[in-house]
Length: 198
Image (tube, rainbow, N blue to C red; front, side):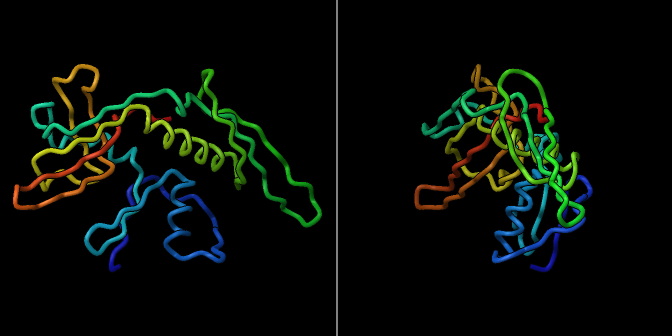
């Protein structure tokens, strides 16, 4: 690894301790909790916020005629949330002092996710809650398909689905598998429809 790139808001954690974990699992868990994501690109490690990538332009457009017959689209409310009720524990500042538990609400509506987390501050508790809700809501509308290969379609790019009624929209690509075989160059793509993040 020769380079590290960071695409997101400025880090706000004062300190974090690593104990009995590999570097990769420690960094992955830390990023996931704070709503950040990891990818390896060439010889670089990239830490990024999907909220920075999602507004970017469209890399490719697809309609059903572009699919090789294998595709699926799913929409669900199960496991998606409009907000979160968060109970977080403020660490003790002095030995023997009782830890304070604080309750806050992020978002609104009737489908609230209940979260209990340790956080250094109210701001961190908000970030943790938003990260969890946004991560869960990525499964609200998903698509996967195989099509003729396109080297420009990579994980973290945006694509558009059009001419397919309810499936139409701008999607963030989570995963791409490129295949070259005797029958040609194909790719398998999966992603979620971009939504309004908290």
